[in-house]
Image (cartoon, rainbow, N blue to C red; front, side):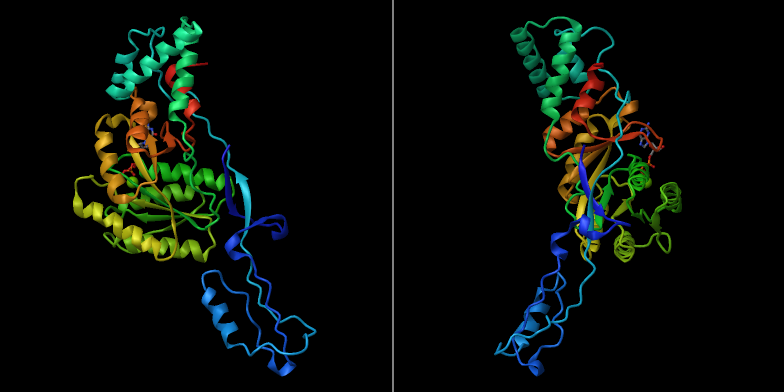
Length: 373
Ligand SMILES: Nc1nc2c(ncn2[C@@H]2O[C@H](COP(=O)(O)OP(=O)(O)OP(=O)(O)O)[C@@H](O)[C@H]2O)c(=O)[nH]1
Ligand SMILES: [Mg+2]
């Protein structure tokens, strides 16, 4: 299970992990005559090392006796972080099996191609499976399913498939992008409820400002997730300013995470794609972006690849959310996207309900695809 770092609430910081950048520096002891003691040298804020340098530069030359009392310090409240696991979500039976009958090695390549694995990958996987089956003398249906499950798991596993919620650089900001109707708002809703269940403080930003209904939809999810939401002040407000205000509120509330919803856009509309850059820059004025999640509808088929390539290029995508795997017999597109774009799939959606999603687990996904029990 993935481990994440969030703010610690209701316990003493000594027992916690403390974010490195906020660790209080010991106050410098100034050796001087009492009247030469510099006024309270403050333990510096991490972002302002210049303050400390300036204070020390102005300090008189160290001389003579040791002062009895250490210099006074103003201790910044340390940012206490707790290492947490989040409630587990299982893919369950959300993934459609590739096979309606026994696994037949002669049909496998065609089946994989039809499931959108891509021609080259389908051939490679089939050849690998045949070789492995020969080597270990596997030929029965359960044996072949086990081998295929292991083979797919291995090919889908990568080190960066966990959401980036471990840097301790709070609030984590997640920007969610994608074409119209892909499942962005729904994914944000599911994710924020789940984070809330893990006692995370979440702020949502409705930077889809084109439609009042889009804002209302996110507001409904915010209610379910007991999370705060920043709404545009008027329809059509610059999405970048909503994004800015969202991060501002997250900082003010000491939230763990801010998730920003954006309007669906076609990847070939240059002005709309450029707008994502503006949203990014607005966020980065106050915080680092942890994730740019590209939401892709698994039922889109091969067009998903074109979408993903365009978004990855302009929006600095860090991970993929693949939705509607429940409605698709073409789960192979997930495999193809991960391989071709060299981007990790981080979350999957398997239904419209609040619980119908999971962290992407290569093994569970592979099990679903081959209907391995
Ligand atoms: N079956 C299924 N439906 C989903 C899933 N995720 C989202 N949906 C549905 O897909 C439709 C569109 O979802 P939204 O979350 O509104 O999509 P969006 O990307 O925010 O859409 P725009 O804001 O219009 O661009 C809704 O009816 C959702 O309930 C999923 O994993 N499985
Ligand atoms: Mg939406």
